[in-house]
Amino acid sequence: MCGIVGYIGHREAYPIILKGLKRLEYRGYDSAGIALYDGENIKLSKTKGKVDDLEKRINSEISTVGTLGIGHTRWATHGVPNDINSHPHYSNSGDLVIIHNGIIENYGTLKKELINRGYSFTSETDTEVLINLIEDIKKSENIKLGQAVQIALTQVVGAYAIAVFDKNKPNEIVVARLGSPLAIGIGDDEFFIASDASPFIEYTNNAIYLEDEEMAIVRRGKEIKVRKIKDDSLVNPYVQKLQLNLEQIEKGGYEHFMLKEIYEQPNAIKDTYRGRLLTDKAIIKMSGVEDNMKKFLNANRIIVVACGTSWHAGLVSEYIFENLARIPVEVEYASEFRYRNPVINENDIVIAISQSGETADTLAAIKLAKSKGAFVFGVCNVVGSSIARETHAGAYTHAGPEIGVASTKAFTTQITVLSLIALRLARAKGTISSSDFRHHLIELEMIPDKVEKALKSDDYVKSIAEIYKGTKNFLYLGRGYNFPVALEGALKLKEISYIHAEGYPAAEMKHGPIALIDENMPIVVIATKNGQYDKVVSNIQEIKSRKGKIIGIVTKGDQIVKELADHVIEVPETLESLSPLLTTIPLQLLSYHIAVMLDRNVDQPRNLAKSVTVE
Ligand code: F6R
Image 1 (cartoon, rainbow, N blue to C red):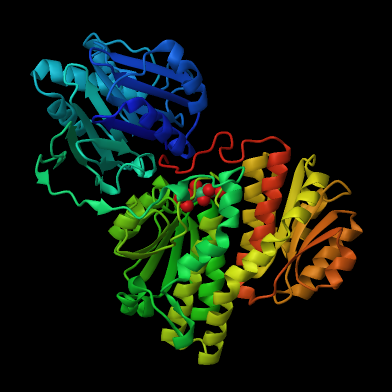
Image 2 (image 1 turned 90 degrees about the vertical axis):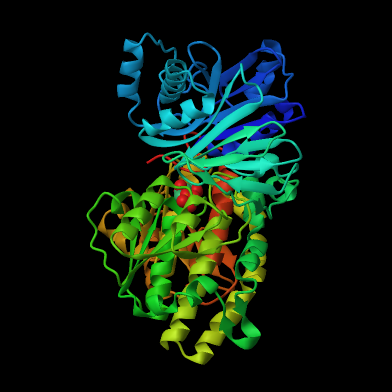
């Protein structure tokens, strides 16, 4: 987690870095800081709190003049969020300054050695250890900063994306990565450094993404040099043309990114299936699947690895793959999978799902699966992300940047991609008839319009939010394809409103959670027509007898649940396998409105960060 930004060139660095930090705040937001070189010295200002807090105090602390600078927005790992632990960090001499995203696992040992050599530390961070290690190597070996960084990184165990500069060499920034992302934007005689491309997209669309164990020295007005940290070999970096545009990363009139992203879903889903879903020809085209069709057809089973919302999308896919393509599926939390000794063999396909493509546990699960010979297929949103690169093949979701910490459009586009894959495999395996296949394609193509219709319930959902905003607990129930949606609805509410919520398979309610139900308990029940509707209606009866408050998510025109429930929110009818794409919409809106009414920080809920790059 943490966001890093740097600039070296001919413009004033401060406004670029400040704006960049605001765009990267989704990565962490418990403290922020900036270091600038003003022509003579390093000026540094940092604070606990958000980038806005930094902005408020920076002008009274330092001059913000300078064409070289680095900035950081933090998600604390080592050391509580406070001013001192915030980045950037100086070396003991005050000559060097660093920003770091990641964790140095052996910092304790390194720190002891440095203390024995006379170094002192003001913060509790691993980062301050790293910058002093660099300084120690630089001084004792009398070498340049780049070389010192390189040697220091060979002594470090952990993960990092770093940017370092030396006030005595104010024409260069040294950057390096292992396990945390780092992009370098290439402008005209200027360079931008950032955790992703959003801080520099209005200046350049040429970028290099450093690979793991690579470092680069970016020099004002010179060519960039990228090399391997371990063997010092020069790398010819691939300069990528970015597709991102500024509107995609701005709020565009919405109060929050989350709301914007909820409303973007019709287009995001369209973008996901564009060029892949060819309804008139009755085909699905996905190069990642086509190129590896033999592997998919020979697969004994699919193991899905993911975390959080992506794991919920994986659970939905379990129903889809098993039903349509008749391939057994196991869905695993990446964090558990990686520390077991899972039985994996060559005929297993591992599908890793991740919006950010940077989630540390998912990345580690992929590496483990690869080491055991499995073929690993990625479903990622962020193009060029670590997971996209680490997997053997994959399919992007093309949802566009998701900035709100709570995942919304990532979830629905992941389900869209997974549905396309399952349908393609079902067709190839002959487990679906051609008429059924065509029917699925037609229905999938209509989903964006139906999502649009589901969004029309917004005002009504808001009025329900008003009634229940003061509630301490919520229960979410669903069955079949909509059981994972119940889990996802509960997760959305928890993470942005801080209200406790549980998701459960509706039939499991009577094995425990039913004891929680009384007249104060709102229960969101997904009861769409084509699922196990009658069974869910029975579950609703059971809730009603215990006086629970029922919020039903039903298919348009439903009468039975309407009679029983306190409120019903209608979604358009579709195939049951596609219904999660619609039923999830009112749940996203419900959590959003409750969180806004409770005055929560919707886009940046407490303690969370968008990409979880630590395990
Ligand atoms: C919840 C949420 C998280 C992420 C999880 C995995 O709204 O956003 O639970 O889904 O951290 O992140 P990715 O998909 O980036 O691997």
